[in-house]
Structure formats: C-alpha cells, structure tokens
Amino acid sequence: MNAKALNESIVAILEKKQELSKLDYNDARYDDIEEELHDLEDDFNEDYGDELEDVLEDVHGKIKSDADILLPTAYLASTLDPEAALEQDEKEGVWVESDSFPGVEMRLVLVANPPRILLILSDQERVLWTAE
Image 1 (cartoon, rainbow, N blue to C red):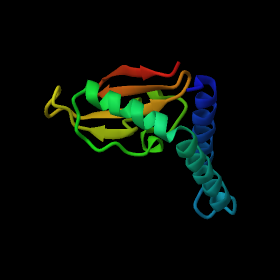
Image 2 (cartoon, rainbow, N blue to C red):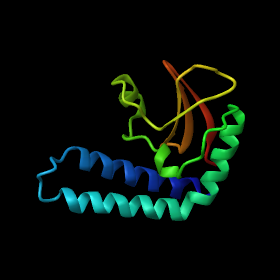
Image 3 (cartoon, rainbow, N blue to C red):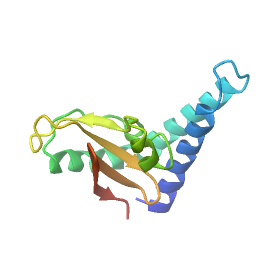
C-alpha cells in the first residue's frame, strides 16, 4: 500500500468534510460539495477498500472484536485534527465491542498524517496500525 497516496486521499476527504461542515444546507454550493465528498469517498473505497478491509480484520482480531467490518470510509475521522474533535466529545470513527475490554466504550478511527488506525478508549488512544 502506498502510504503517501493513501494519506493524500484521506486528507482530501477530510478537507472536503470540513468545507461541507462550514456550509448551511441552504447554501447554493452545499449539494455540489456534498457530491464531491461522496465521489472522493467512493474513489477511496474503490482504491483502498480491499487492503484496508484486510487491515481492519487484523485490527479487530488484535482487540478481540467480532463486530462487523464496515467500509473503510466509515472509520474516517471528521477532521484533520482528531485530537481536537475528541476534546469536543465528538464520536469519531466506528464504535466496537471487545472481549478484551468488556463494557468499555471504544471506537476505531482512521486518521491522516501518517495514515493510521487508532483505538479510542474514553480518554486514551492507542495506535493499532500505521501505513508503511
């Protein structure tokens, strides 16, 4: 997997998400920006879906989770600064259950710079995979 190209794709999606989040639904540009975002996400899933699904299977195995594996775009953060989003108590990524941490709320989040998957446990995060 080309980590640089993967990172560029993630950054493009997150920048488009940020651009869209600044617009009101009534803004004339909203539908066009939303369509551009969906196109970027579709391209991302097509280009990296199979490889990232394999990575996500490994990650789910590491944390002993039998949760369904979703499309890679479901795991994407909503901002380029995931720490800021976490401080604002946004629910980034995908909620998962784990036999290793019964009853603990945790999420898996795909972030950029470098591309990596984080396990978010209440006030802590652990890197479970980094693109090479």
